[in-house]
Length: 174
Image (cartoon, rainbow, N blue to C red):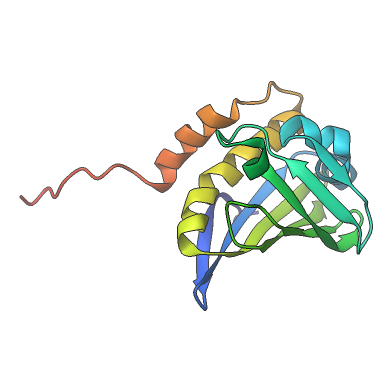
């Protein structure tokens, strides 16, 4: 599949931004679904999670990695779409940012799964700040699925941030 977006991008419409990542995961769709919706598995790569798995249910997560207080890392919301093993969409209510919606769409492709992840409803500055963090969490998800050691979130954040925001090198025409 040649339209994957492992590094993600930001799309802005009407003053609000959407983060989008599209990755091919070398695992069956049921395994990927479990990794994003099972509280224990999600807890390993994202942070402590409680999920009432149904449309109208709730989700509460405490992201592990970001260097802010526990309160600022706590995300709550209502589950908007619960369609196993294809779509998991929930509100993203977090003290640091405006309310948004996160969506995981899964599509089987042979023995793999195409994951399309979106986080919409962000201000542009928050989207610019969250893209590296989302990338780092998705890398942790992949490592967990692959049975590898999970990368340190803060270290991975710094590494991938450079791919989104290369340091200014001055004008070569000066």
